[in-house]
Amino acid sequence: MHQLPGRRPNRWLRTVFAVALTAVATVWMVALLPFLLLASLVIAILMVPVMQRLRKELESTDSDLEARTINVSKVDVTPWHRQVRNVWQKQSERFNKKY
Image 1: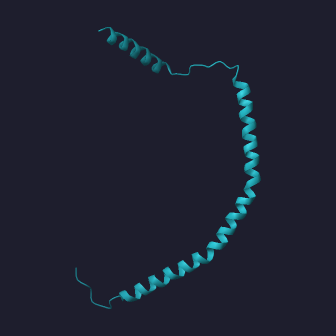
Image 2: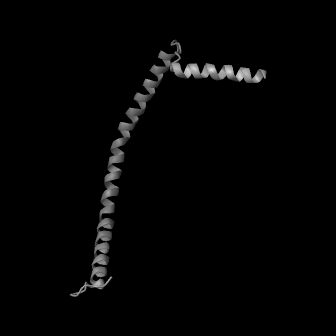
Image 3: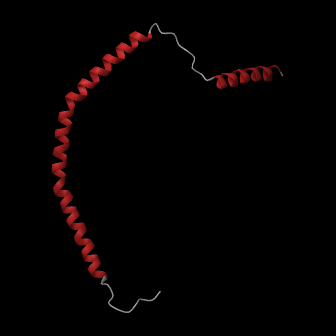
């Protein structure tokens, strides 16, 4: 493929622009990093009481559930087609063991 006539774009100018943009972005991120770390520290400190309350609520809910499920009988919720398949497999296993 041939270059069309006219001015050729300067590759070095694009390279300098890309390096300058990368340097500016790096400096900006490094300058922003302490503020982000400080904000995350403040949010983490504010979350401590929230997490403690959530843990207490979960523990109380867990103990309530244990008290409720002691006298509850278990119900088989296997779908009918799975029950039929299970019975069929058990019978075929017994038949195969005999022969």
